[in-house]
View 1 (cartoon, helix red, strand yellow):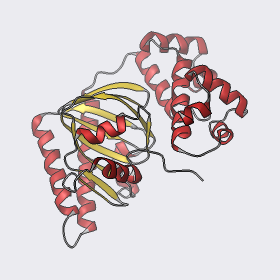
View 2 (view 1 turned 120 degrees about the horizontal axis):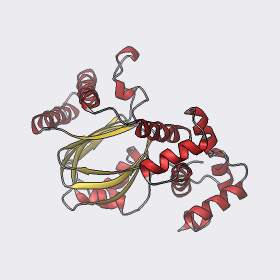
View 3 (view 1 turned 30 degrees about the vertical axis):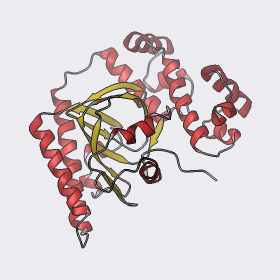
Length: 296
């Protein structure tokens, strides 16, 4: 039987509250949503201290109130600081590296269905945007904070009014969507090579479990393997195959450390030809066998 993946889902939040004695003034959660009112560094030390990548399987929208953090988000290194907003869609993989002692995040996680009909879905919820982080002006940041205040009060209202709460959640999502689209309009078009690299990374993030070979990605982008490899290396300083390997290794680590799936089943889930080849691949990239990593 598969265990819950240790991430900021409901089970992880319960674990954090238990181990760090987070107060009810800081976090409220249920099977439908979670609100982090004023986080403290104990929460992040508990998560980052594991030194492991985390899989996020729901929507997260947050505000960096103070401090800064460094993390790998969907394979890309990010530096997020005070005054920024962050968005994660389901399927994101976050590997926290380090953060300042004064890091404080306020945010919202939606474990339930989105409160939109299909034709009203914001663009950020249509599957094309996996994550974004951006700085906003003080007025906008304050407005988003005020909206979280309202959500916090609605979550504690007696009786709880789900229709009103969901309407406010929809407004919160729509404002994040507006800010993202506004930034996209103001951002200069990427160079041809950067655009190819971005499309390559997007493909890797969605296909790496099934497709391990550079030839597949080159074909999807209508490029030769050599040309794609040269561009990826030139733009990022890392080979195209290394990006694919990085995604595969991260997923394998999550499955080994946070599930009880047999190694053979993991190899199968990641579309390796057989468990022996998966073990050899993992050892070559990580310096130890899958079972050694699981037991480490």
